[in-house]
Image (cartoon, rainbow, N blue to C red; front, side, top):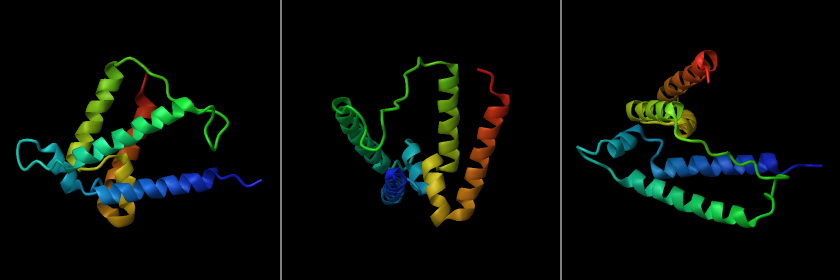
Length: 139
């Protein structure tokens, strides 16, 4: 029996990458322009984020009405947790990396296809950070 899940994953990843490229999220200078609110602020990414929120709001509304997903036996949704020091610290670290590098994980991986050297440096630092978390994190 052939499963459609790999095909759906490929389609989803392709759509995500195309959306990142079309929206400018893979352009570090555009990201920095959005984050630099005191100089030449570029609000373009605010509209991108607003569009993403609208799509997710629709997805959550549809999910509530579905008995099960189309390509799985059950929904595997993340639980909710309280805002704690680890969450705030991780968000601060993410934001710092986003501001300094102009990329976050999704756009960085997609940028490997278009601008490989700078993206590879960012991705290598990201992977080292993930390894460090696994080695030193004590929940």
